[in-house]
Length: 280
Image 1 (cartoon, one colour):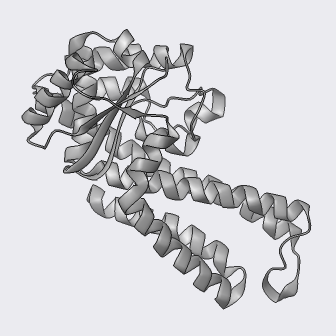
Image 2 (tube, rainbow, N blue to C red):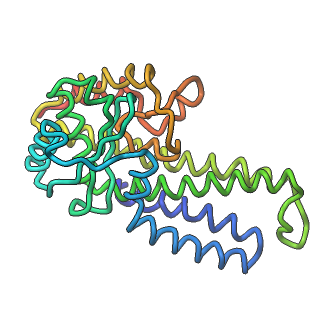
């Protein structure tokens, strides 16, 4: 199945979760949930990039502020055949980067101060090529919307769990089924996360491959990924929502045990193996 079709299906499932929660309160609840989803998707389309950038404290910079960074972004964007995106810097020692925006004409690439300190020029170029690939492949809107919807579902899950603790909200047929509320509060965020994870993993592989083809070499990105995994372990991100972790080139938060297995990103060794096997 085409990845674009898969993504539409998965985004539909995320939306369906919210509609399913609303349907618990009958027809009126379903209508409210539907209106909520339409409004949320509208704002996600036009404002998800601004939400994400603000969530991770990204600040727009000029060429005078970051001359070397601008040079790399401009060069890679030209090689990829897309307009120059806006450039942002996140004040964090966590070595990472992400792209956001609704299309190549309205895109932004953000890097942390940590990644600029950690990587050599060719390695940073590989990372920028990965993010530019997300822009060119139009992954950034999908990832931003998925992160926004997943964040809302997680918030609804928290509210539902609190509702269960206080006897519910007077659900279907007037009963206060605490068990049902607990199930909704626990299961729906997990479902949202698993769907978001499925969206993210396939697109990370695609962006890695696209980056290598844009630069005609996978070596810079390979070296960068090797450094980034250990760098994130030393300096995990200490702010921002975990719902947006899939936007970054590597998961910016501390991952251990089961949470590592359930990461929104593919295993690093698998990404590197695939890059090494490419013939570009």
